[in-house]
Length: 326
Image 1 (cartoon, one colour):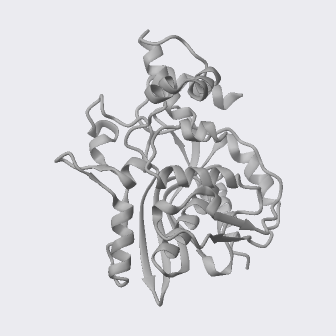
Image 2: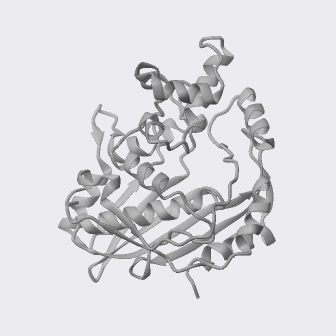
Image 3: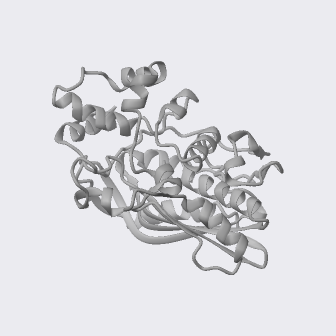
C-alpha cells in the first residue's frame, strides 16, 4: 500500500470519529482525535504528499529559517513565504488596540515589513519560537544553548545514544505560565523531536502536541523528513524513518470540503530528495542544497489558515472569525 494512505486514513479517522472542539482564543471549531502515529521509510521515497501539491519552497525556506536560528519573519517575507504572517501581526494588533501604533491592515503590515528594515526589526520578531529554541535556548545564567549542534555532536560521538533530543517547549514563555510581558503569542505546536541511529540508519521522531492535519501537517511531514535527511548527512548515516507522533490531531470545520476533495484522489509515487555533498555541518545547509526530483502531484487545494492557540485578545478573536468566514 502507498505510504500516503496513512495520512489519508488519518483524515478519514477524524471525519468519522472526531469530537467537536472550540478554540478558546479564537472560537474556531475543529473536530479532533487524540494520540495517533504515522511513519515513513525515507529509503523508499520522500514523503511530500501527492494528493495535493505541497508548497516545497515554503517547506525549504521555513526549515532553513528554523535551522539558522532566525526568529524574524522578514527573511520569509523577502522570499515570498507568507505562512507566518499572522503571528507578528497578532502582536501588532494588540498595540493598535491600545492606541500605541497606527492602524494597519495585515496586508499593509506585511508590505511594511518588506519595505522598512527598521519596522521589520521591531515588529517582525517572534520571540521564543523554533529557531530561537533550537539554536539559542535561553539559559538562566544568560547563556544560550545550541541544542541542534549539541545533538549532532552527540550522534557523532555516540551513535548508540538515547538522548539526541531537541525541545521547543519552554514553559517560562508559554501561556499563563509566563510573565504577561514575556508570553509567546505563537503556540509551539511541533514541540519535540528525537534522533536515533540503528544499523547506520538515522531515524527522526517528532512529537506534535497539536496538529492541523489538513493544512499544516503536510508541511510538517516534509519539513521534519527533510531535517532527518540533513542530520543523517552531517552525522555520516543513511536515512532511516521519519515517525510522526500526534497529540491532538484535528480538522477545522472550514476545511471539510477540501478534505473530501483530497480523499477522492489517488496517491502518486513519492519523489526523491538529495542533500548536496558540500553539506558537512548543520550551518552549511542552505535551501539550494536540497534537490527535489520527480515530484508529481495533484493540484493544490487552497484553504484558509486558522491561527489558533497562544494568548489572544477579544479583538484578535473577532479578527480570526472574520478571516475564517471569507
